[in-house]
Length: 299
Image (cartoon, rainbow, N blue to C red):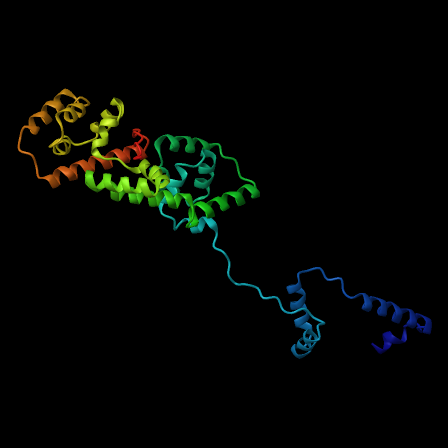
């Protein structure tokens, strides 16, 4: 090192003054560091003693440390996994085809498969066709889709949740006997007319079968076990019995007519058979197989 130093030329006073001035100017400008405030603080903490950094911060020379939250929101589609299938079905059955297809495409595959199986049959076909030609969504479209999922599926105020509540209430009313159900509907129509209108979409009783057109009535009764239909018809008027029997094959009709001549089953058995047939009608309607009549509202 000494030998190397002996080979260096002498440095003039003017050159030393120029280097000092240059260093002074650069020091005054500071370091042009590109990065976040937290990154700057991290760098400073590595080169400045903790006591000195605390003093500089107290004097206002350094900004206060930035608190970084460790809470990270769970991805929307991971949260949707915990949403009940019935709530998703209720929402998608009333949603536009394009939106429904995009939501199902974003969902967990196993969950989406279970939802698709329960969708209205006609709506389901349209959704599946749209999913086959669905193009990748832009980042803005993805954000909008996630916001729809938050509002309608993850929020307690979502319309899908409201529809689910109505379906559950309707299920209770449908399980009542005719007089009790009628009384409840009348009271609700008087106190909450708008809710009564929405609720009526999920209401159906055995007696409502006479309001079905011939095609829908034939499809419904064709899926009902003859023995169950026989039990349900006991105690009904002759006119009502003949209307339902006219939708059956000649062989089935003769068999039921013969059974109706026998002793009637207990009232509980008759009521249970009627409720089961009404449930079948609602299931077929939800699947899009039949169309239910619009229930007249109580004034």
